[in-house]
Amino acid sequence: MKQPSSLTDKGFFAPLHGLRGIAVLYVVISHLGNSGLFLFPIPHNAIGKVGVWIFFSLSAFLLTTHLCRDFETTSSRVFSLLQYLVHRAFRIYPLYILVLIGHVILGDFSETEFLKHLLLVQGWGELWAIPVEFQYYFVIPFIAISSLYLPRRRVSLLLMVIVAAVLFYGLKQPASVFSNELNAFPKLAPFLLGSMLALLLYKKALPESRCLSLLIPLVSLVGLLVTTVLYRCLANGYLSNLFAPWLSIAIGGSVVGLIYTALQPNVIGSLLGARPLVFLGEISFSVYLLHMFVIHLVQKISDLPAGVEAWFSLGLSVLCASVSYWAIERPGIRMGKIIGQRLRGLPFVGAHTRSTVNNVDNA
Image 1: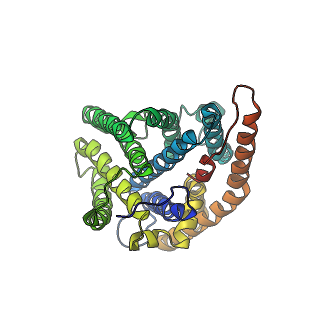
Image 2: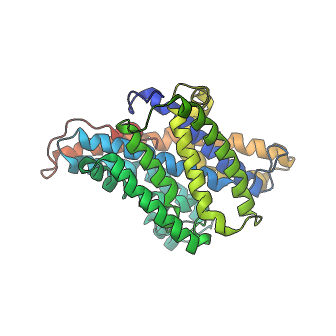
Image 3: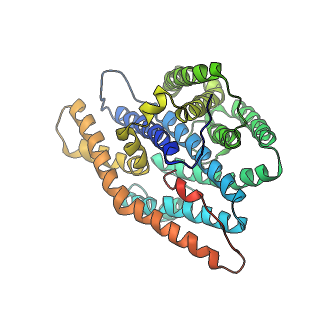
């Protein structure tokens, strides 16, 4: 199976943006269903966590890949680490702060709770995922540094041991796995699996096999569909919570399989690289943070049939997210790059040869 020639090529990102587009669709159509707005006759409520797990695995894969490469191609790892943290902050906070202000204005939470959200110690509604993902941002540098001094397969094995510990914890506390609690540990499986794939792909440590090239796409796609159904059963109480930690790993495994598939020249990669899905993936953070405002507004002011309201809410969410992406997210990304580059002037940072983490600002 042909490995990606460069994990910083532009073509590398298009299908992964498409996969991110699918992730945000999971979240939006789930919340539409939860609000009684169905886009089509098939029930699509209570599946949003599957989309969040896709986000988790993708972010871990992209950021681990590029921080590993950045650490290897820089003369100052302190610079790379500071730049990585600045980029993450400016990628998330500009829009996040405005959304928090919006929730305060609407009375969803108080000014004190606003501060707690700002400090990432509270997560109201769909905002819970941001503090959880931020916690893993601080884990990635340790993985990247470890990969400099240990064989990547050995680091991957260590991550698998942690996955086993997460599974054991989940078996003891199954309700915590898919909860909105901010404890990231029971939710680490998709993150760790994404980082493991990044380590193995970066140095082409995965075996090449025609059998795998046919098997991985099929198993991953079927796995995602099956785990979606199983998660909906779990969320609706038809499946015991005891299955939650196993399901978390299964979703993460299906996603990393799709990430690997998306990087190969195949039909699935081509479909994920379709421009509408790629665009939706690029604006997915805005869609994620704004869609509930839109759904509540449409339900409040509209007397349209529920099916029409559902499609109108989806379209308006994409429209608002497009504006938000260009007006708020892109300027924030540019500011993060500018400040990140100016860090090289700090006396304790030292010189820097080349940075690749800039390429994952949409992660």
